[in-house]
Image (cartoon, rainbow, N blue to C red):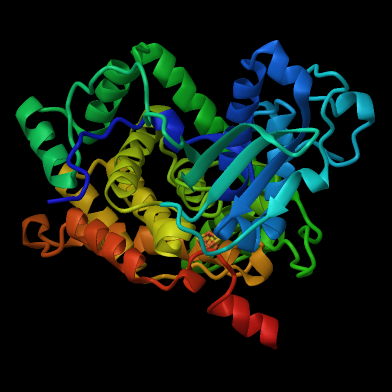
Amino acid sequence: MFSSPSPITTSIFELFKPGPGPSSSHTIGPMLACLDFRSLLEALPERDKSGAARLRVRLLGSLSATGKGHGTDKAVVAGLLGHSPSSCPDGLPAGIFSLPPQERIMFPGRNGLELGPDTVLFGETEHAHPFSNTLVCTLLDAAGGTILEQTYYSVGGGFIQREGAPEKKGWSAPAYPFNSAESLRARAEESGLSIPQIILANEMSLTGRSRAEIQTSLDTLLELMRRSVERGIRSEGTLPGNLGVHRKAARLARRADCMDDPLNRFLGLLNAYAFAVAEENAAGNIIVTAPTCGSAGVVPAMLTLLEGYFGFGPDGVREGLLAAAAVGFLAKHNAGIAGAEVGCQGEVGVASAMAAAMLAQVRGYPAQIVENAAEIALEHHLGLTCDPVGGYVQIPCIERNAMGALKAYNACLVAAAEDASLHRVSLDMAIRAMGSTGRDMDSKYKETARGGLAVSVAEC
Ligand code: SF4
């Protein structure tokens, strides 16, 4: 049915990753790629190390087109300096380009290597590599000769691929292999397990981690999501960059709290929660990819609603997060979750589908309704382009997270109200449509800030 018949072997904690915003493809992915390149450099023989004179990281495709607005140059230097997304609890290290010389030495060479803005080159936006977000990392000698060169692809959601390397090493097979919503449903029916139970069992068999360890890590993710909502709700002021975008989450929350009409209050709070995380992301602070940084507000908004508004407890929301993971896995495996590959339908569209599945799961609906809720949410994001104004993950991204959360809620309402067996469009069909629409989409609508709103607003 799909172009990728192999079973899904993605870990929950690859999909949901803490890291600094504003873009998983443009900050977390490049940071991880450069951290990996650093490990290759450290493994070089002493002869090569002592001949090393400088480092160069060339950014191609969407990384070049919108890398400045997304802070990719800073993420690259942070990765080369040995920082990982999870080791930056307060976002990217401040003053990364103004470090004193002794801190700029990357590994012991004859004179050490200094890193700075000139380490990063913004290259061609059109290129022949298989993924738009491409980095070429090079270690050079004093004469400009190449000692080591490695190409990386940032394939969305902070996932990277090292060119020429197998995608994953050393993991076992999943206990309940699936690669489509249809096969996931079949595994559930054969085994008598729920979707969350299958995702948990697969995580255990893939990674060898115990149920208790996974549960602890899930709780850490949920806590990080809660904190990103709380921080965003408390923060005011202007976001970084030259658009002059003001944070609105605090204002939305205050206004919602004063509303007498319960429907307006409910919608106002959901908006405020989604804005809060999306604004934290735009500020470069720590969020959890869900499935990406740009769309990181949708699932935490639903989480906060489920806990704070409806009073669901930790067991329920953990199961909801696992159901959301299943939808994220399917979208990543069969279409893509990077704005640079499939447009915003793969970011906010998939986040909305994940949040709809989460809500349906926590409310205790059967697997078919969980799937239908996800499908409806995704279906009504199909064709959504990625057109960030000025290359910043702010306009339309922040408001779009709120719209994604509202659509998720509505999708679950619609799915729960209909006869699930009569639903005509499957989640697999919607994901397939997203993949083919993404392939047909002109590159100017795929995180290059060369089309759509990015151009209209710039021209005003
Ligand atoms: S428009 Fe959507 S896909 Fe593009 S940067 Fe914004 S959130 Fe990400």
